[in-house]
Length: 286
View 1: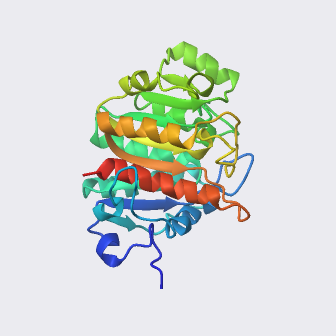
View 2: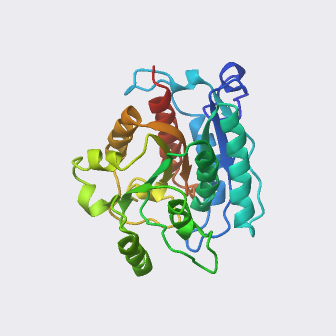
View 3: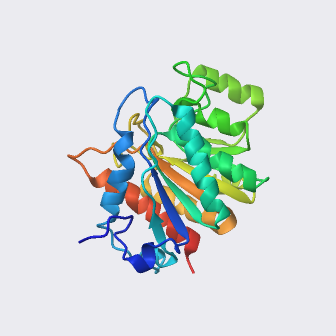
């Protein structure tokens, strides 16, 4: 029987002795357009069971660091604040045990819980966001914790760098101007070059939490999201940037969120799983 965990790893590499702890959070309570993010974590884990575990780019096998997959963090759909709190408590627990947490979403609102946990440990924390949307609304659909508000709550905690942005509300634009937020890299300016890499990385502190909303990627390769926006990042372009980030900063944890799987097209599920595995490889490359 194939092991039911990320990467389909045998016990020797998937036990609680592992360095990496994968936390699936199939929470989906505030989405307002395409549905299905609650099934994202399971789809990523299922796809990961079919990955080759050798990485040709890194010439290594990232799973050797050990990847332990936790049970899905169950939260009632109508309580986003409780979901955020449960993520915070779980991530805090694994940080305190010197594990490297990887959160699989689920909707983007859950990232706030992870950032809260890391902020308690790292005073100089900053957050690198890969996303199509700014997510800087103060409130949306009568909630300050809606997935459209997650970065507004995070920027109240620590500095942020936003990459791939191409969809905003006018209130977000006004907030950016009011707060003089400079580290926003719009997709229209970065899609065909890497001249922005150093500036983006320069906006980060030493310790960085990485949050990846999969709609940051172009929908031609990542259509399985609730709010796909044209003009996103490419696979190799994103990997090239992330590898440079990992070479210069200490990434303390990350999440990959907003996969809304489509049973008729599993390629995006596989891409999301591969992205998670790639990032683990960047972190633990010997």
